[in-house]
Amino acid sequence: MLIDFEVSNYRSILNPACLSLVAARPIKEHQDTNVIPGGRFDLLKTAAIYGANASGKSNLVDALVHMRWMVLNSVSKEQEELQGWHHPFKLNPDSIGKPSQFEVRFALHDEVFRYGFQNDASRIRAEWLFVTRKKGEIALFVREDDDLQIHRREFTEGKGLEQRTRADALFLSVAAQFNGPLAGRVLGWFRNIQPLHGLWDLDYSEYSMKMLQDPDRRDRIVDFIRSCDTGIQDLRIRARSGAGREGGGPTPGVLLAKEKSERYRSDFTLLDSVHGVYDGDRMVGSVALNFKTEESAGTRKLFWIAGVILDCLEKGGVAVIDELDARLHPLLSSAILSRFHSVEHNPMNAQLVFATHDTNLLQSGRLRRDQIWFIEKNPQGASELYSLAEFKLPKGQKVRNDASFQKNYLQGRYGAVPFLESWGGLDGLREESGGRL
Image 1 (cartoon, helix red, strand yellow):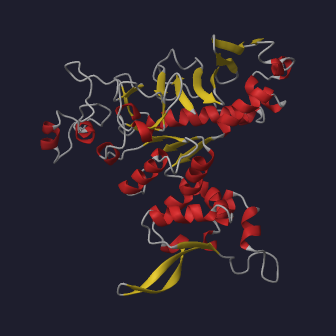
Image 2 (tube, rainbow, N blue to C red):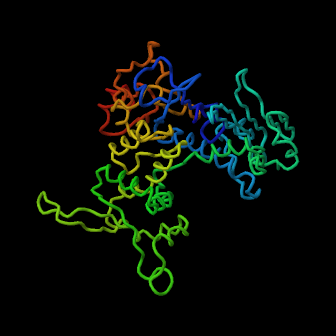
């Protein structure tokens, strides 16, 4: 489970920005649903990030996804493939030549790990892995440029791999590649981060299509789509006319199992959605509609992302979603959030970190103050991150749990909203909200 993530000097984020999923002890609401109880600290199941357009929401989410990509790919990629992996803050002359830094803390098999690295445009400048034992943190390895210090008892799997680690590759990834058991477990945690983008939902169609073909799992995805009031009663895969070899072609299952996501994008005619046919209030039959051409964009998105979300809920892990609400009705965004908060639907304590503009989630009362995060740019153009739990009102008091989060946010009382200087027709609203929307 994710404890916290910190990033600095990455895109619009200059100073360290730390997103924490540690539940604030003074906050007691939704304790049974939104909180994962633990020993030294409790963890939150979800975190929502709000902010104006170009405030840095996507950059924060992308930073965690970028860290995951580096851990999983830095060893296998050639140097030329890693071109452009350094994205420093460019609005400050001092930061351009400095490395970006990423650090994550997570709980895995009753142990707490802290892993991070620094990289610039040509190499890994620093890297470290710590584990927490009863007596405190132990450094499993610490790397500074070419100097690599390894704990000989706690991380014996790293011995002898110093010379096998390229300057542009992560030592953790090298140790995992050589079947280091501890490094492999840490790498597996990163693999269980499920990145999603609400505007590129088509990229995740492979997950949903494979789940639909699995006899043991298809009911889960169909039930999910049915429960979202789409009118769909069933989903069926059918072979395209002329597909495959002469004589009828392969069965849909054989065809789809061998295809990559790019092929799925051209094979949407394989999928039909089944709807009821009614004579008044009485259902008299059913009809199959072409999913690609006869379902709404929102329904299609819901299905494409459903496989990743349900897989995360089933196995545990961290779903990281940018633009969760794109093309979705607010109640559907709320339904996805509810799945992660549900003890029944989330038995493995999967977590969801998402960026959104859907302020209805603030009004519904489903989120605690420590689950609500805001990001906005300072006058120098750098993104700054803060939570509603730590936000101070003008007189220094904290936000009450019974405050109208949605109304106050839209009125600009918490910041992280666009400042509109001369938009016609909005003068009255600007005056009411103190000049902010």
